[in-house]
Length: 273
Image 1 (cartoon, rainbow, N blue to C red):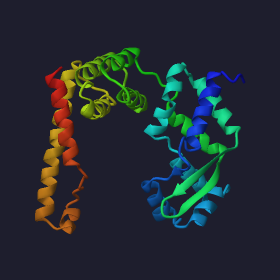
Image 2: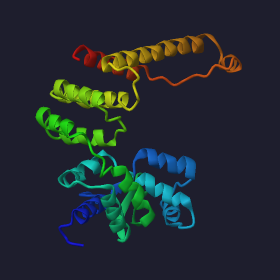
Image 3: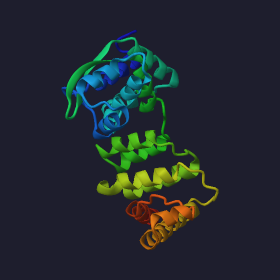
């Protein structure tokens, strides 16, 4: 394959990130460490080594999938290459095949345990490529709006959030996003919060033909959740848990601060809509 091939260029960039990018090693985050210790029972570096290298067990593959899960920083590092070429699903497979054919080595650091060199198994590559969303496209009007109303590094961060979201790209949703970008992107400190809330809203089908009415319906749903949280709090204060369980009442975890924040953002969008 030609050294200037777009697929080869991106495969090399992905391999660089898999091999820890500019860092000496890839640090395993606290959540994965907690999973390994509490679920897998792995609590020593030697135990980690044995688990990861056990080809007969699916546990090692599962741990590799967690450890190599590409975060936003990984995607930002390769976004310039992704944006430069119009990659297709077929290209994704080509890139995956290229990487799976290589012996890719890196160093993993497990906080509290130490570091060790590993060879990434070929079967761990495919989940990484799938999660990078290389071939997923965003409406060009939205990309253009980001270039007009936002600056780096916010612009690239927004592109990644859009690519990773499963928002429904219909015309009404696109118009709402264009409006949100134009009006709120200059508010750099808070725009990512606005974008996240709106993308979450746009992942659902909305029966209302008027998108503003859909936003109002979503606000009413969130207010209902706050009312439910109040009723639960009162019940927990006034009744023992045994009695609540005997009544068949299911206590739902509700993040009041998060819901209130989302309501404020929806109000801002509707007010300026």
